Image (cartoon, rainbow over all chains, first blue to last red; front, side):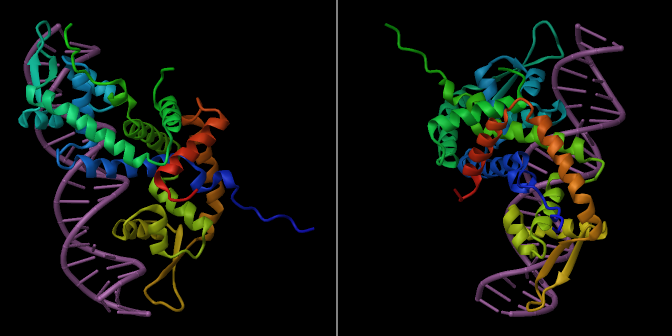
Length: 150
Length: 150
DNA sequence: TATTGTTATACTCTATAACTATA
DNA sequence: TATAGTTATAGAGTATAACAATA
């Protein structure tokens, strides 16, 4: 009997790799985000910054970096951009002159609910083939990958 | 009775957005891929190209672009790089002089099983908190997002 | 006219290093 | 010494536009 030819096992195929599928799914989501939020001139990164500042007003820039997994070197120009656009306030910390305390401006606070609704529309669109239960499962599994919690 | 203050609903929080969690999980996976495959000087994109050429020898460059969701303008220099490194052969198509048929060189064919094993180690590492069943579920849900199949 | 593949170019995101000012 | 924030710079990934060769 002839020896079976060595071939790639199904679980080693590119299509079966979770990393590859994560990248493709994330890429599609990023593109759809740009479609939905192009009018607001918000990208995923800048929207994430605004959303987190909204949820934690007075947050320090360093803490924002930590929570979003960004380097402060990359955060700085983005904060400057949001400041110039009148969306973010950077206030001095009372006890530590190195620290910047971040908050949304009244204009951004007013716009935020609408932006959150747009993002919700965007999520409903690119996740339309997943049930509510499947979305909850996906959320849990993704958080198992990149957070230490749970 | 005072009117309840408008606040962000839990499902609109940044942490609850699947797009955000996709991005964070994918980012972690990309970093871990670089750690594992740094020695081989293969990045996710170039590895994906090699893996698919391996699985479909003789595939056309345009078809590789389509399957990987890449623009041919971005594919061209990467194929040239893999060609120069002696990993990919570009052969003329008999009936259509515009077409390039792609195949792995003998050297790449020999190295590929080891690289696939490395990628498997990488996946086991960044997915260590997910059971086998959870990984299968995650794979299915991710494919529901970005493919038209199933 | 449409398709295959190439080149040039620009933009976003991310990484490192060097710097300041404060603690 | 360590931390907060800034600036400069480089790399990787992706986008569009213009092009040559071929169908």
